[in-house]
Image 1 (cartoon, rainbow, N blue to C red):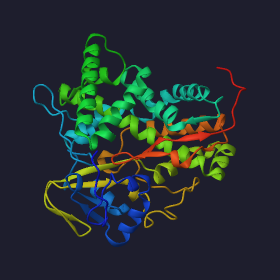
Image 2: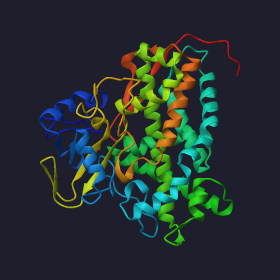
Image 3: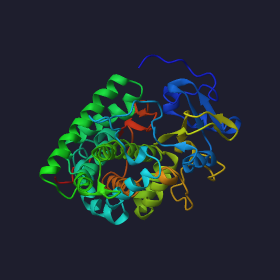
Length: 406
């Protein structure tokens, strides 16, 4: 990515890819809420940025004024199949099309459906921990947080879980690096599309009980699900299911690495972990989404023209002191927590039940095996930003354990 001009005025020239903003966006949101609750920029194709809980929710719920046909924080070209049909996913479609597609996917992500992954995820976490627990140090983002979501999603899609590192690399290429580097984006998008075309061909010959097979034998409006909708949604499951949960698990462990009181309390009170997970999701929400204005309108007095992009910073909304008491503090026993880490409105995250399950188990198992740990070098922690914010390198150290068998 070419060098970029520093930001002088965040209200009229913000840059969501600014390195300082990626590392520490909270002061920017606080400043904007106080003097300009909806910021604007001409960078990265131009966009508007609401920063309050109410304005973000207003846009997220208003499908009449704001379309989800483009949900990336910077413009990227749509994907099309060989017949010229745009690949359509549940996340990038509007009602009424969205309604039918979501109904197709719901059976795989309902609370009872995701429960079947509880024990396999627990065993996966234990295997990963046994791989480094004797070393006394690890990049916990790379060797733990990153490894869990792609393997769980692989089980849902019926694809090879041993390709977890490949899946993570592909997703980063499209969703992180590719947002500012078209060559990287096109390379990895082509890899993903080719991979799933091959997987779809395999299911036609040997269907199973996975999501790809389910979509191929399902109907939409009385007809077989069109291939461009099958392709769009199975690709979405990989892209949306990896980076987001990887970032959330990593952020929670980052917090616990330098907040020993919180860490020790969760070790002593593991029943509090589900409540703590909700607070980690609130304070370290990873995802920012976009909407496109259907016609000229306004948000909190800021004019928005037809076709302009509005960024829904769910992380900023979740830090709004008008919506949350002590909003910038992490209260792991916060009882009332109406966060929007999973979005809001009709596009609220389909995989929220699965993400919660993965986070809870990842933290439970980590604290059970490594109850004491700290950042090895705070300056070595790196963060990804833009569409999904989370730690990419997170080196920690801890007392070595040699009392475990493999």
